Image (cartoon, rainbow, N blue to C red; front, side):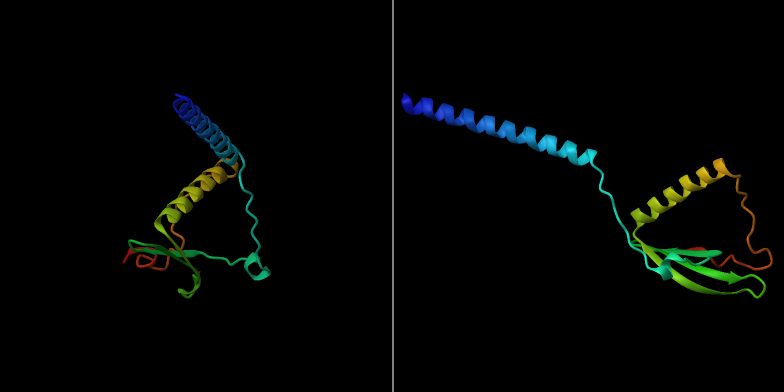
Length: 132
């Protein structure tokens, strides 16, 4: 009989410990969700000065999106790709969403952007969006 009482007490203690642990984990998860990590990024001077691009070519396959940034000289229809960014599809979609949100904010703050042909005298139909 004493053994049964001791076993019941042990089971109750284990259940109480499990409940306490679950409550502590729940509180820690709530705190982690409330606290956002501050990301700090460094940038060297060469990258910080940036590059001007007036043409972006996008290619993709099942695994990735490839963005080639170029400067096209409109007078002579000659350009040079100076940067290639490769993204997985999920990050490419996030980028598209962020750009859409920022363009909407820009248009609210400044002016509506029209979709005019950037290089009217140059055939850019083969440039831009393609599938591999």
